[in-house]
Amino acid sequence: MRKLLSLTMMALATSAFAGGYRVSLQGQQQLGMGHTGVAVTNSAEVLFFNPAGAVFLKDRFNVSVGANALFARTKFQNETYNWKASTENVGTPFSLYASYKALDWLAVGLAVYSPYGSAVEWDQDWVGSHLVNNIDLQAIYVQPIASVKLTDKFSIGGGPIFVTGGVEFNRNLTRSLTDVEGPEGQRSDVTLDAKNVTAWGWSAGMMFNPVDNVRLGLNYRSEITMEARDGDAVFNDVPAFAQGIYTNTTFNADLPLPAELTAGISWQINDKWLVAFDYNRAFWNVYESLTVDFGNPDIATSVNPRNYKDASTFRFGTQFQPNDKFAFRAGWYHDESPVRSGYFAPETPRNDSMGFTGGITYMFNAQFGVDVSFLYLHFDEVDASYDHYADGQSQNISFGGTYKNVVFSPGVGLNYRF
Image 1: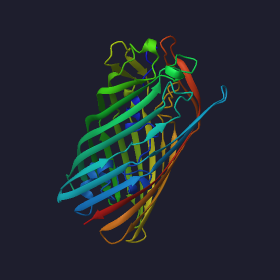
Image 2: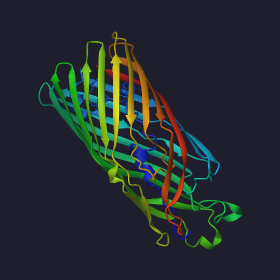
Image 3: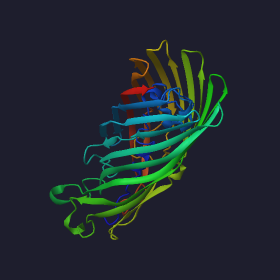
Image 4: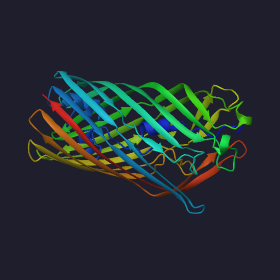
């Protein structure tokens, strides 16, 4: 027990940007269109997808607010050892966007959203509890933007991004009940709790209309480093002989969130049909490893190899608007996993996936309407393992099996403009 197991506080990083289940839920209208949006100016949701597009919105004032119920289910099985486990979790991400066209060539706005507020909770002391028992993440992004029209066909936009959030994470200190136990046979575990973790980044984009009814968009988000400082590390059910070492303490960890680049095109085929395509590249290669330092010098520093790779997402969506009252949407996207072979851990059990989306808008009048969306996210079944766990005596101990994941998420929102 002298060396604490590899501590995966990187769960905050992956869940907070694109890991966990990599579910994109940053707007009801654009979600209905396969989460395309870098070259679309339907609503105030463009503040997230490409702030350069805010100045091209038709109305002077635009507001979009919405929320989703995210239902995620993961099943794990290892037939060799007859291991089985499952986890079902619910999240409620939300978004709020508001833009104001101060001048014909200038728009300003504010975007507030919680894109990755979900959880993973396995049964306590399950067979993979030495890697994770549960994670609960909360993250809120606040992004003021400015959008400037340089010509009638070209605009730029961007602004700073402020991130605030926290994470609670629990795992056992040993691999099985045959290892060292605490009082009354209870498994020893540690809970890491970091609150009020903040960071800054930025976003910048451009939008161009080369010909009538066609838009091109490009948006970049910078890498963001979440600096968890003086979080609480609480040890539970530690046996008497180890209590002198494993006392409650603090921890520090730097959690880099990767930069991403999105490019896309939209085509207004006629006054009723719109189609869009986005390509997103997330630069996950920054995740070579994560280091966690404890305030108690008797607890060894935890170095956690991740070796992530850059990953792409391909998105396609369409909108049909037969009249001023209704708009119907559908979309699809393919999301590549950044996890390499041998680095698949159950705190973020995700692999390549396909998302199928749909949505409807109903306008009560010319200014006010309701948006409804739905996402079904299907992950490829995968046989995978994490091969880099160390228990203080042995290195690179493998844990793996077959993972089956599925996510679905209904959402509702309101839009207002004048």
